Amino acid sequence: MDMQGSERIEAPVETVWRALNDPEILKQSIPGCESLEKTSDSQMAAKVVLKIGPIKAKFEGAVELHNLNPPHSYTISGEGKGGLAGFAKGGADVTLTPEEDGATLLTFTVKAEVGGKIAQLGSRLIESTSKKLAGEFFSNFNSAVTGGVETDA
Image (tube, rainbow, N blue to C red; front, side, top):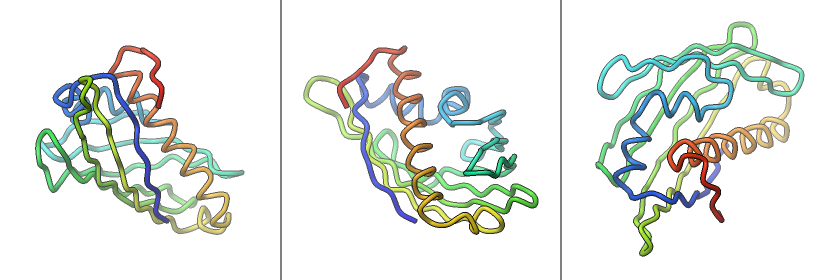
C-alpha cells in the first residue's frame, strides 16, 4: 500500500527537522505510541497500541532513519510485531521544503505492508485506517512543532 501527502507547518525548516529527529515529539505525534526510545543516532525502539477494525494489537519494533540529508530529507522505516495479530512494516520518504513566508512544506510518500490476522481484514479497511493514522500523525506533529497553532493545510 502506498500513500502520499503533504502538511504545511508554520515553522522554519530547521525547527521541523529537529522535531522529526526528536523522540519525544515523535512519541506525542504517533497515534497509540506508548514509548519511543532512541537507541542510537539513527535508531529507536517503539511500542504502539493500535486498533484496526475489530483487532487491537500492541506492536513492538524498531524505527530507523536513513538517507539522511539534513535539514531537507530522510527516509524513516520501521517494523513491528503484534503477536497473534500479525506484523506491520513500512517506511516513508520525508522531504522538507522552505516556503517564502518562513513556513515549511513537509511532503511524504509512505509504503506499508501488513501480515497475519490484520491482513485478513481486507485492504479497504487497512487502507482507510492507515490514511486516518497518517492524518492523525501529521496533525499531531504539526501541533507539537507549532505549539498548537492551527494552520490552513
